[in-house]
Each structure stands twice: as structure tokens, then as C-alpha cells.
Length: 271
Image (cartoon, rainbow, N blue to C red; front, top):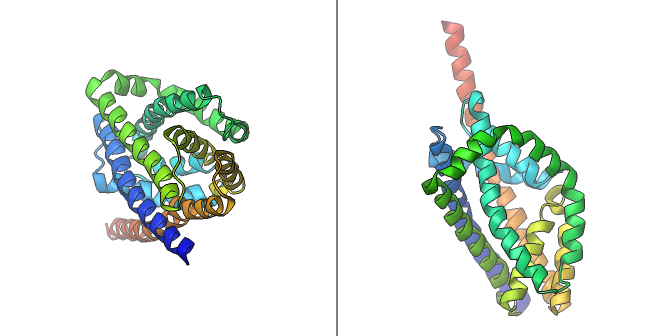
């Protein structure tokens, strides 16, 4: 019962942190979209992001599929999809710079924690990610424009840093709630490991994420019971709850869009 109560606190904290992360994510994306001239409201950006959560859970390709969906789902003319992709890619670039710095810290520590899992996940995801990168090379002009504007680039980097630090704190503090206090270095290594493992091409990273996270926690010296509870709590926080909320948002907004399209069709018929 004590473990269950602690797990409940961990899930509640993680869910609150994820809510804040999603709100910051929408703010960052909208900033890039508006800079490129797209009239996308904050709520429309938030709608597309939230509706994409179940796509990343149920469809192979995970993050790649989720990102492709939100690019397609955001309310913007089809002719502007290239700009939407550019604003989205700039998010990956800004986060990639920060995560790469954290990865250097993890590698420089010479700690074996999670490195095998990172190598495996990178090999598994190399093909889909590589194909996506090739498809985005034609959008370099928009990316260059985003990066060359100091205000926009600073906004991206500042929000990305805030998002990653909050996410890192969430990952570490859930472990603290469950009774194990990691060192700062362990928290960084665990976060980088989880970020990379979550990109495995299986739906929601099933198998790769769970086994890799458990192995990283075991190498840190976390007791097996706490490690298992941590993986379960993280699954609820980062997979089950977001997917459930996303399905509700997708059902509501998708139904509304069908009704809007039906009304337009009826008006054309009357004309």
C-alpha cells in the first residue's frame, strides 16, 4: 500500500509536469509558425499537439509518426505545410543541441549506464529518422530564416532549455518520490537514456523503452522493486494518460471538423 501511495504521488506529479511541458511546447511551436507568417492560434497549436499523442503510442515509428500527424493536423492551408515542417524541425534542432550537450556529459562520465540501450535504440531508429531528414533538406531556407532571426532563435532555445530542464526534473523527481535519490549525473544519464529509448520504432517504444530503462536503473543501483514501479509510473505519465487525453481531443476536434466540412458541402450544394 505504501508503494501504491508513492506511485500515485509520482503519477500526479508527473502528469502536472507534463501539462506544463505541453503548454510550453505549444507556445514554442506557435512562435515559430507566427514568425513564418502562419496565422495559427495558441489553441490550434495546442489542439494539434495534444491530438498527436495517441498517434505516437499506437503507430510504429513513434515520434516520427506523431510529428508527421501534428504537422498535418494543425489548421493551416496545405500550401503552407513546408513552413509548418520547418517550424517543427527547428524545435528538434533547438532540443537536439541541448540533449547533445547532456549526452556529452553522460559519455564523458564514462559511466556504462544506458549506453548499450542508447546504441541499440539509435540503430533501430536510424532508417526512419534518416528518411525524414532527407525529406526535410528542401526546407533549409525557412530553417535558415528561423535561425538567423536572433529573437526567434533565442525564443526557441530558451523555451527548449526550459522544457528539457523541467522534463529532466520530472524524470528525476519521480524517482525521488519512489524513495531513491539519484545524483545529478545519474539523473542526466537516466534522462538522456529515456529520451533516446523513447524514440525506438516500436509503438510507444514497447520493449526497448521498458527493458532499457529498467537496465539503466539497475546499473544505477536502484532496487528492482523501485525500478519496476518507476517504469510503470513513467508509462502512466508519458504514455497512458497523454494517449487517453489525446484520444478525447482527437475525437472531439475531429468530429467538429467533419461537421464543419459537412456544412461547407451543404452550402456549396445550395449554391
